[in-house]
Length: 483
Image 1 (cartoon, rainbow, N blue to C red):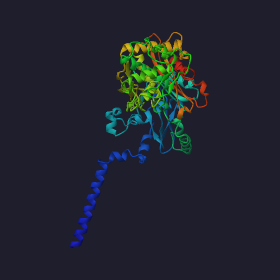
Image 2 (cartoon, rainbow, N blue to C red):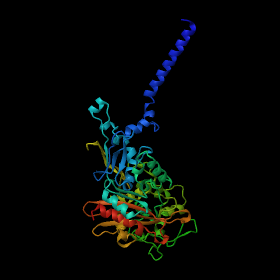
Image 3 (cartoon, helix red, strand yellow):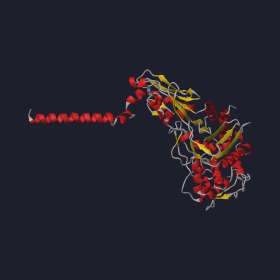
Image 4 (cartoon, rainbow, N blue to C red):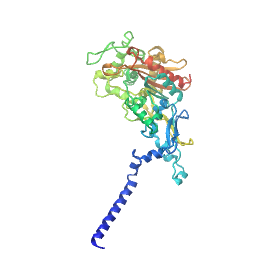
């Protein structure tokens, strides 16, 4: 063999060795990146080769799988899709998945190792998909949906004792089944849903934040009591009406000029939603104490998973005294999700303890065997039991004798707080209507709710938490208690 032939042979051998090393590297080190790459068609083919497991509400599936007769053998189907879209999310052959459909994708399509049996391992087959059992009460969900009546907004209901989310409604909504496949009709539906910046696909209950307005006065009241600024809800405050914001000439007035807000007690101030009282309390407490109390309720928490990640509710920093005063009435740069305001009422209802909100109860295999329980978890103590009892009593006064009368239910103890929050530059937009509440039926059942209604077509003068949002809360509470 000539020298040139030997060199050529050696070069070819090196090429073969390099190719083998590269193939081995891809097969071992880069296997995961290829197997999870969205451009890999095999992922979708495998995922939709058989029926997916289901998401259950009230023990019944609100999802399904329909045969297609195509390469992607099945596509996702939904029962009452718009009603439950904020819970399920979507699973689309073309556009991927989100929310519970995405978080539990491996359980639903059978890849979760907890589903595998010895037989599956020997035959190298994938077991049937498992199920996600939610905490959602279908009666509460339906009641909130019907009560919102197509208005833009959101409603959340929580069991204060466990953190279980009983209702999670977002409007406008969409039918995930319209984008589940890969047909021209699915593409057209996706374009239509995307045309409004995804407004219908946005989970307003978890992912939209709004100025909480007067509902935030519950946080201010808790801070005042916890920091010893007041000894109780019936102690008079030192609150001039009108109140001039510190360091400014701006005068803060009240919605109802005839309300007895001068030096009002916390009970009276919550009943009449006195801006002067809570702005001055926040200024007297200062940013640090207000921020610390808000944080205990869940504000500024970067990661709140239900297990769907909720947007961060914000209590701002770096404020002067006047800006801090405005935060006391839920304005300036305070923002909150509807979930967050439900958490405020839940902590008050549970005697000061805040449970982690969750919409999933357990995960099961296809036969119903539990593979994971989602146990209730405590986020922390927000306030003393004494403070919580005081605020419960004051919230009841709001419903029996104040701005929240429309939330009253015969035979049920209901406490609440209304809110009408500014919207737009210089309050140029139609205000948001808020209501947050707790209720106790006296038989061991409690519920905490929060509702926000964004009705851009409403007359500004007709927007109120008691008029627009409280009836939605009432409907959820009645449904939860079977009334």
